[in-house]
Amino acid sequence: MPKTPRAAIDSSPGEPFLERLRRRPWLAFALIAALLGFSVTALAVMMGWTDGLDRSAVLAFEPAPNVGWPLALARALTLLGSDLVVACWTAAAALGLVVAGDKARALRLAAASGGALLLTPVLKLVFDRPRPDAVPHLVDVSMASFPSGHSLHSAAAYMTLAAVAATSSRHRLAAFLLAAVLTLLIGTSRIYLGVHYPTDVFAGWCLGGAWAVVCAVAFPSDEGKGRDRES
Image 1: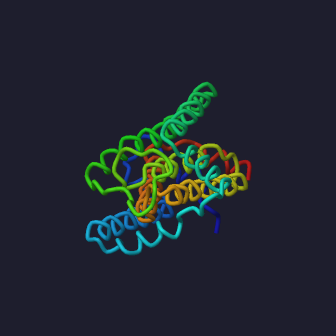
Image 2 (image 1 turned 30 degrees about the horizontal axis):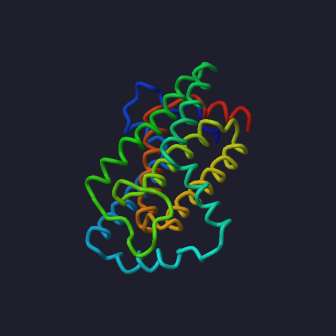
Image 3 (image 1 turned 90 degrees about the vertical axis):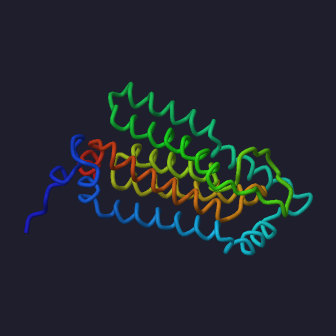
């Protein structure tokens, strides 16, 4: 039985969001799983169910005295997830895509980063969770703790960059693995530096991943066709 061509199931710009999502069940599953993960974590945090586990984890991650290189590495990783750094490279990458004539991917990348920037302060204001107080903060922080903005922004932006930068199925797998590892390291660095609980970071990963999926569906491009030709 002949396969349905990929072009026949690709989303078109005028197609409703839910119809595009229905055509891509793997993205629908990822979106539901990510939103469920965020919702369950948020409920557990609000009810205080994770307080003991969170506190124990923060204490376990506390850096040993006089160990310099892990702290330097953690600060470097956290810098890669900062709003300023992520926004700068996102703007540069989006501009490069526009110059190359690929406005669809540029819009998707800009939406992923811009939406994460808007979501973070709103959610922090809503949940208003205090920062960990069991260990010293090894970097400066200002807003509330839940969810982790570094985790949310890096998950949304780096995963989207991996999707728009990949030019073949082989490259796509490598790009997603690299983005996932970097996102995990950035989130973990926030716990190590004493400024987030594990649940803050996990919630950020979930919501950032969910937003990346929303952007993938809401701003379709022809990247899938290009990958299929080169695979």
